[in-house]
Image (cartoon, rainbow, N blue to C red; front, side):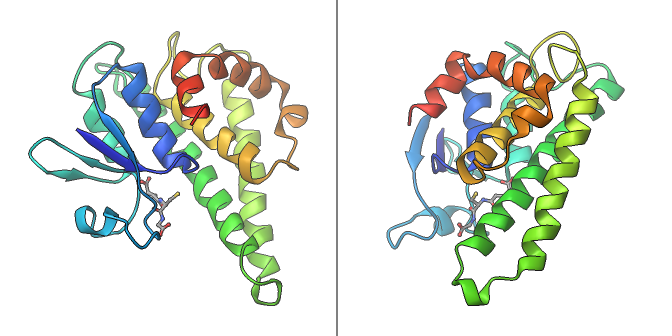
Length: 202
Ligand SMILES: N[C@@H](CCC(=O)N[C@@H](CS)C(=O)NCC(=O)O)C(=O)O
C-alpha cells in the first residue's frame, strides 16, 4: 500500500506512526495537494491528505478511518483496544481531541499566512483558545500516567504526539511544556521512539 502525504501534516504523521509502530510494509509518497503535479485529487475526491491507496487501488481517507483500518491488519501492537468498549471509546476520544487540536492549529496557520489586511483576528483567537483548552484537558486526562490509555501505547499516544509536534512546528511561541510539565515528560518519552524519530527526520 501507498500513503500520500506531506511531512508537515499532523494527520499524515499520525498515520505514519501507526504504520511504523505496527511495522506494516508501505510506500510513503510525498504529495502536497496544492502542488500543480499532485495526484491527491485523483485518488481522494476530497483532495486531502493523508490518502492511503491499497494494492487494489482502493483509496482510504480520512485519518481516523485509515488508522482504524490499519489497526485491523495485525495485533502487534493493537493500537485500538479490541475487547473493552469503554477503553476503545476513550482511545477514539483521545484521537478526536488530538485531531481537534490539529484542526484548530491548522486554522490558525491558514489565517496567519493570509495577507495581514485579510486576516480575521477573531478567528485566530477562537482557534487558539480551543487549543489552549484542549491541552489543559489532555494534561488533566493524562495526569501522572505513563500512557494516555491503559498500560501500553495506543493510537491515543500517537495522535496526541502528532498534534504536539505540529504545535512545535507552527506555534513555537506556545510554551505548552511550561504550562503542562506532565505532557512534556510524556512527550519526551514518546519522542525517542524509532517511529517518531523516523517521521521527525524527514
Ligand atoms: N480530517 C482529515 C483532515 C485532513 C486535512 O485537512 N489535511 C490537510 C493537510 S494538513 C489537507 O489535505 N488540506 C488540503 C489542502 O492542503 O489543499 C483527516 O483527519 O484526514
